[in-house]
Length: 534
Image (tube, rainbow, N blue to C red):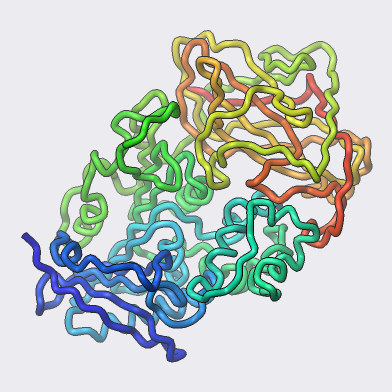
């Protein structure tokens, strides 16, 4: 039975702020490889279970856990991302001066706990031997935006909750807060004073904006995984909030870096490796999908591989291991590539999806009122909420649903980046179109993927009434279609509470003081859904 030595102490950062730091040492004296965790999701009054910590099997590693600035028992003010680089580098230096430091450091995190490590990875510390960094994107723009639309249901509410987390400040917030017009000045409504560190992010919807190359826009984190030589085990899930970002990191690694690293994609959500269900649910569960059961010591396996040469199993360097939903099988490949077979479904005027293109195009026009936006259940892989059952088709006047015939194949796997080409027009000088792809089985629709875009994002000038083509590339997925299943594509112009509502006015949406009602039109016969199968 392990008997760790547990020590509570405070590290003094370069600016004098004291950060709570807890040590778990496998023996009272000695030098050990060190696992580093920096944690913001703790409170001052969180009890410490010392018996649990003393008896935890750390596989011979010392574990250093630090409460991030302004959270838990640490001093200072929490402003998301701002201080993590300096505080992280200070912790590395502090550990190197401790008597238990053996010369080998290992990074562990998940979500924001991964971000704190991304903040300094571009310094490529030579004593960091490996990292286990689940479910986080390193690109700040992707965390906040999709095609210029602020992810109010993800980053918006999270940032308002994290700001000055430890301080007893007033937070006037609800799900409808981000429907306030103008968005500029919203922090004054929430906190009673303007918070520039939060407000500034609302003003840069263009990824090419120089703001994203500054420290405030995450430049320290940018491309962190390419700029270091540390072997990293990435994880995500097909319904994670950062699926696309993690896969972009993986796909963008040079081959020399990729050969050092590995990646896992589970069928779950931001909780990529959940415990078995204890409550009944009609949503599907997946056989042999929980990594905790397949490889219970995954983190230690990864670290020990680089420390003492322990052979890997389940994962393989240079490979991505992913789970195909409903097929219920794991695959080990270079990436989640598009299947070799392309299938195209055209949007028809009778609100069906058919493989044949109609002889003539048609049009479906609907009213889009920004003051009464359409709600959608589940965030797919761009927002919180993951997989959820959907409302019946055409559930509102501003949600247009297109349904395919039942699939005739006994089974076929849809894999890769599905695409939607939407031919459309509007009576407004700018507006939004939102698409959501669902799998319909036994009469129930489960969300697969979604995307959002505006008429003026790619071509800045739009003349009301003109036809334009929006091309959506949906984030990678791998799922099995069975005989009798159907595909459903919903088209709308809003998606609350997940995305900022478009006002139908041209220009920076954060500055709009009001909104206009418009009529948006889908051109059927030309618009299509394209999937890739294997």
